Amino acid sequence: MNAERALAYPVHLRKEGEAILVTCPDLPEVTTFGEDEADALLRAKGAIEEALAARIAHREDIPRPSSANGERTVPLDTNAALKVLLWRTMREKGLRKADLARRLGWHAPQIDRILDLNHHSRTDLLDQAFAALGRRVLVAIDDAA
Image (cartoon, rainbow, N blue to C red; front, side, top):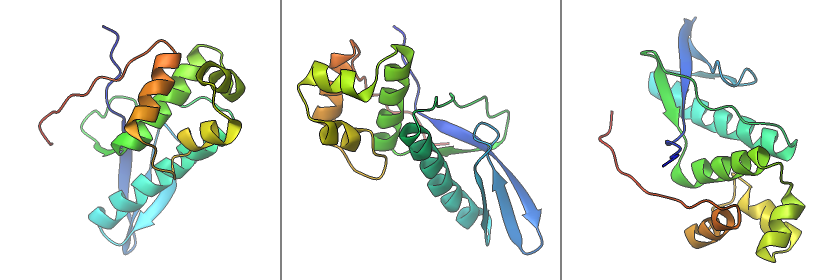
């Protein structure tokens, strides 16, 4: 089984005056601040999701999260993680949005929505998209950190 684990990107937190600076080594475009650690991590989640959405919009690769090595991590929500994995699978197979649309018999706006991290997609539609790429979604639950 070649399972892909949930996406959680490591982040660096550093005190900058009264604020906490957050950067993400895997996504150099991610830089944000928070008033405290909780606020910084919340803002980091939004910044990471926006960076990933921009990479999809610009047809760029999305890196796998590197090892946390004791650093804090920012997990994507399940819907966003599935969309990132769908995009990554398409890229690995050399497929474009139009190719996925043809395989599914869907129109371009439907493909755009299923890859839009700001749009919540139904799980059954994501399952169909993965099936069209020869993959299936498996669900697992783990202890919270």
